[in-house]
Structures are given as C-alpha cells and as structure tokens.
Image (cartoon, rainbow, N blue to C red; front, top):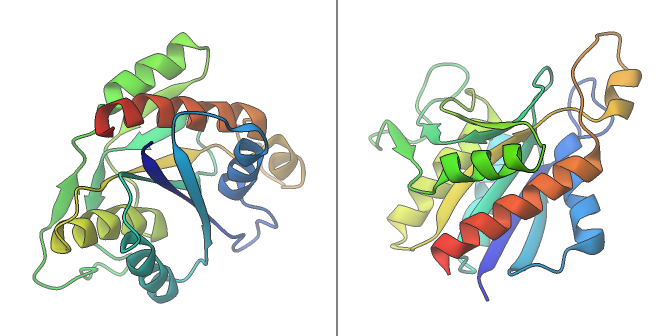
Length: 194
C-alpha cells in the first residue's frame, strides 16, 4: 500500500479558515482508497514549515501531496514546478537547482478531474511564497536524501463560506468537491508510484 503524506496549511492573513485544511479534513472523514494517508497541518511560516517538512520526509513516503488555497482561482490547479525562489527574490536554498519539475502525470490527473465534472488544470507556477516553497523543498529534500518520494502541490479554490465572509467576489468550490478531487488525484498518482 503506497504511503502518502498529505499536507495543508493553517489560516493566514484575513482568512479565518484555510480551504486546504477544510478539504483535507473532509477527505479523512470518508477516505478508504488505495493509499495509507499521513496528514499534517503546516504553519504559515517558512522556517517552521521547512523544518517540519524535512522531519516528515524522513519517515519515508511514496508520494507527497501538498494542498493550499488559491484565492481567486476557479479551478483545481496541479502545480508542476517548484522554484528555488522566495518572495523577496532570494533563493530558498543557496547553490541549489533553480527549479524542480515533477515527473508525475499531472495532465492525466487534470483530464480525469474534468471527465468527472471537476474543473482542473496543470499550472507551471506555484507562486513565490509558501506554496512554492513546500513544493520545491519537498523535491529538493527528497533528492538530497536519496529518496524515491515524488511530490506535487495542489491549489484549491476558496470555499463558499470563505467567499461569503469576504468583501470580494471570488470563485469558490465546496470542501466536498475539493476532497473528491484530492481523492481522485491520490488514486491516479499512486498508480504511478505503487
């Protein structure tokens, strides 16, 4: 049975909830799929997130799926590239590769989501904040430690409740639908790493 590390983030800034954590909790309420899931909620702090991620990766996983919310996005975004870049323009890790691109079949996952009526697409830029950092660092640490672990970052739309509580008219997706998308992603990707 493949071991999957599934991570999400705590609330930050004006958001009193985080769609990634809500979807993760929803998924764990009913998940009975083909993988052993280990879940984590990471702080919105680069140093602490990096430390905890490094410790978690040493437990040995076949697949790491990081989840984060993307205010304004109307679709599930499967992020393929992690950049060695902080939001201030400096590298996450000096003298390390500029980027890592996942070898996972994200196009096939996006096609499966769309076929199930869930909007999803492959994206090639996870930003320059913690979402990108989680993806880059999990790929870099895995390679540095000689692990076969493969990683991906999945950006989720805000939940309807988050949008209702905000002053801006963002797109939204229910936690139930986001959780279903995550389950499908796990199923498709664990076929590759099993």
